[in-house]
Image (cartoon, rainbow, N blue to C red; front, side, top):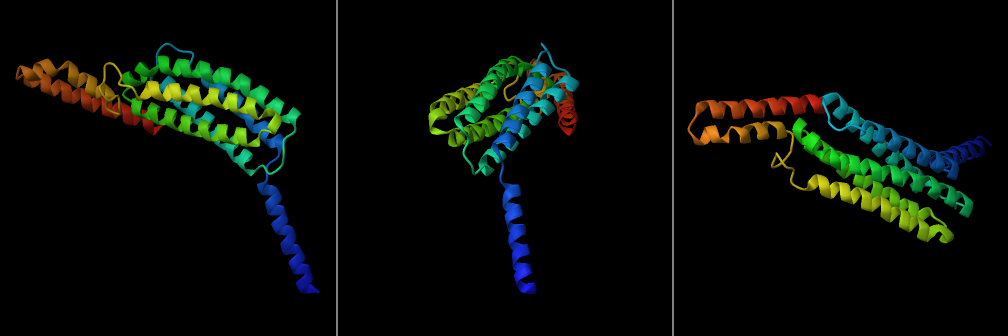
Length: 229
């Protein structure tokens, strides 16, 4: 009798863990709403014409929040084992259509601010965020298409293509060579300073070489400060 009760209890625990691991349409809708909210907040941080270390950090943190929300959405979509109704799918797609408009705006602002990240010497950090944003968006888009019922499949594919195109555009822009800095990596500011003193180096001036080294060291220190927060 005890053995039977133990088996039943174990079965209930397994069933409970399966239910806990499975997501619902309601949860997916909640994750989608969270993505939309995080993208909106990112747009607010991007409403600037220039960046300092504080605003740059705010943009980076906000972009990481968006990436985290997308990851959570992909996880819920992956764990979902049911079938969304046409009405539920339409609601999700409608929300995400609005999100895509916000993403497109954010991308344009991100591209416009690229040179600001170069000036701060942290372009490589921004490139990493853009790459992760792009990767997670592709993953989420694939899940979106997979979960869409047949009636909404084409609409899901079209929307996914828009999201992917937006992020691909941003990744292309951030991976192109930046003006004012050949690599635009962590030492971008220092490299620019070194470039400005190259004439002094050519003229065998010790001051030019020392100034270039100082610029490189300063750029590296500023980049470390930016990344450490």
